Image (cartoon, rainbow, N blue to C red; front, side, top):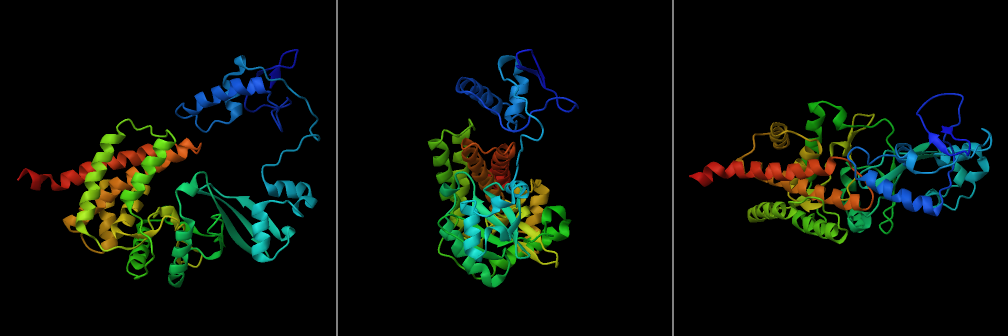
Length: 393
């Protein structure tokens, strides 16, 4: 940083040496904050700048904001990014934090706080937040719901699914599940890798796992009705003034056509994962496969799981067609392809609405929502094209 004679910061560069740096806490007055919040909101709407830190906004607008340097010696200010950093600095801090998440762990395992070590934030998921920790030589993941999840997920239904599939040994190993808070503690597979890092052989294994689940005969008391969820997500977007797709009404009409087609087929329901993102299929160090994150699961059309895998993977039409053939272990008939395209469109629309709602709560996903919305429109057209020769005749 550089400053004028009064200490006002008038220049900031990234990098350098032998100079004063931005570090530690900052105090922002109310008048400054009221003005600065507007600028932050302005930047948040700029493409490519949604993930800016507040410092980036300040640097860009430095001529319009008065911020003054507060010089401190290097051994006077300490910054802690994680609880583990604080604990290393102050061992006494791990005795009684009064943190609800830590308390949950101590209660579940009958352990003391200092037994909980190696706490690490994990990459944030789209729905939840998680951290890993070790205790008595074993590693675990603590999952806690993300913003707005209470209106999206029924945790009692999720608990029901985990109980129902336990006999299959295909999911993550649950240590603790609280259906009221959504807190979940499960075994952390340190050396696990997901299928997106593998070749087509692992895609085949993922499809085999889905087929095994679909054919298991396991039933739960609730369904994942995609038409109902689309209506619910649309309502949430309206309530939060979240809708940014100007042609949403015409797209919704197209989706209704697909919904009516699906209903006309009267497909028997099986247990579906629904959130069949390739990242949720993990290969353990012993070579076995697991499918994690069952919070959206319920009874439904098995082809819905195939479509979700395809759109999450950003597959092309050719790759999507081949994926269904891999799942079926044969070439699909026209009605199966039509269902696949219909669910690709409906799934894209559903997750686009989901993203709009989450973004209204301050959670950003970049281009993901728009990509899903494009899938909705593109696969509706492909569904139409599948039947167009028949219609013309």
